[in-house]
Length: 396
Ligand code: ADP
Image (cartoon, rainbow, N blue to C red):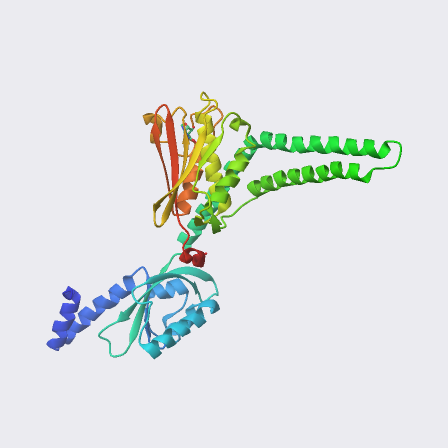
């Protein structure tokens, strides 16, 4: 057991000796401490009735002391939490057990003017008291939460900007993809027209084939446009349970429309047939893959025909690693410290945002991103991601 503090000791001694002045002094010190706390401190009994508050509670919740003492703590909670709180207390009364003691949690609270705000609440049990009492320690974290939201929105906008740049680069390739089926549709339509206009009875069988081809090609165009729309759409992170391999295949399919890919194949080293489940935003993870593949291809400007390799391996029972390897120019020691910094680029038309955004996305998913480079013939960019667990889906 920890030794009592000086103040507790002074109180104990004063009590023992019936020294009322000493008790008064020590109590005054305790009350000053209580009131000087930057957090709101609220003492309640086992039914939730407020017995004592400090001055920060009054300023934080915009109440006077007499408005709160004797009232139930639930008056400081929004309706959505009130019921749960009543439940905690009645469970405590029935079982004598509580699972909130010693733990902190983020909650919403409500001020006297009805304003809802974000708090961090920790609860402790008051020991050595004549009856059961709990002390709630409350920090107002609404400002931090606001900053966090702004930060997330900025990162989201940044990711959006990069996606748009990437789309600009992909646009030429996509135009090429759409042009091909359009040309095919035109020629099948002309063939059908010729058949219809040719003398004699119309051969229905002969015209069916070009019409089917027209439908097929129109569908292909629709698919390309659909993929484009998914990438460009304003997108807030939406995590879901996904299988990693189909996600990699889809990213590879997308790069096929990138004109720079010409002359570079993608070699996949995946244990096909296996399922690797992740809890991620698939669009964001594809964005990371597209960035790494594009960088790999850019690095192999002089190595035409060399492939980009994508591999996967389990790091532990809980993590998977995806790697993108190229045989390009490598990364110099000078560049190595800045590689993930925003706006760092060695390319004439580079923006230097690709790796920075990749890092934000991977860190946001609880993973890591790193590279190894053997200048001048090999660079491996890898990222790790936690494997799916039931807890993850519960959190969203
Ligand atoms: P950008 O592609 O617009 O330059 P990135 O943030 O994606 O922006 O990359 C930053 C820099 O990192 C690149 O300009 C390049 O110098 C370096 N880099 C990234 N990937 C590779 C790679 N696979 N091989 C060599 N250098 C790379």
